[in-house]
Image 1 (tube, rainbow, N blue to C red):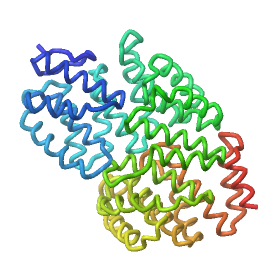
Image 2 (image 1 turned 90 degrees about the vertical axis):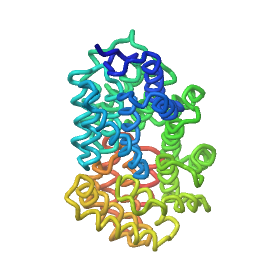
Image 3 (image 1 turned 135 degrees about the horizontal axis):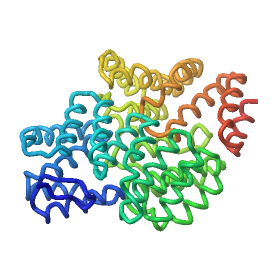
Image 4 (image 1 turned 45 degrees about the vertical axis):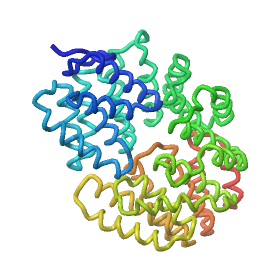
Length: 438
């Protein structure tokens, strides 16, 4: 008979001490705390036959947005294929999801993680891995619906309940249910002030509704609880930076970048995206960001050939456009043009959204604002395909507005600003855009 992990999901492994370590690592991952991957690697070195632990590790590599992590996923998947006869149904579901992703069936892999929850709603690992694939694929409705599948099987007596509420709040926000999302995010953070994903969800809710002052007050008031040394703390500070930009407090935003987001040669891609996205916005707002772009562009130059996640490609092009690196920009476009011909999930994403958006940002960097408007305007309503959140993809609309202003296209700029104020009130930033458009 199978044992249960600390969340109540079955595992085929028989060593309870190993199962306890696995549960601890999985809970650390829920809180985006260090170092669950290191713990699982050590566990598998001791017990290489622990199937669910290997599914967890392979899934972490699957959800990494860096193609350089994919060989690690393939390595563990190959081992799991050999162990599959000893896996239980839950574990076979994880192996199936990995198989689909390895085969390039990204959307089907995401659904496979959802299917596990039908019969195993206490599999919080499948929930989190699936939640992250939703993020990578820009699936707003799935981001909302996935936690809903399991919420009724958990309650406040479960120590992990806040994490599920945080995922649900983020999904509600991405699907546009801002009031319900805010209520759930506040409930989440009220239960667990250290739930960095819940903090992240509430930051999104307030930003989407234009509640800028409330967002700054919330984030700074509890910074000592979420501001640790993790990816999510860096990203949450990026959200705080967005609030400062909305208030045109550019010096404060730049200082926050330098303290928490400055890129080094060893930075992970997700951290680099935050730096690039903030620097690009600041530069469009007329802020001199000095030589901060150089190391960012150097790092992105190492992943030009990935053609894997269009979200990465777009941020790479920001760095090339901002630094005038025409050689790298042309090389990236050539790689994407070739990848766009493939009849795969990735190829279709690049064709429909990734490539035209990258072309639009490249044209913006060259000062060809008419071409930038054309490329971005034709693809921006497909931008969800590149993944990331609505707040992150808002840089696309910022760039289109600025391209219209610089091209002297006042009617287009005014129309885009009208769109921008539909869901949230005027702010110093939108007023600044309006003055520039006039």
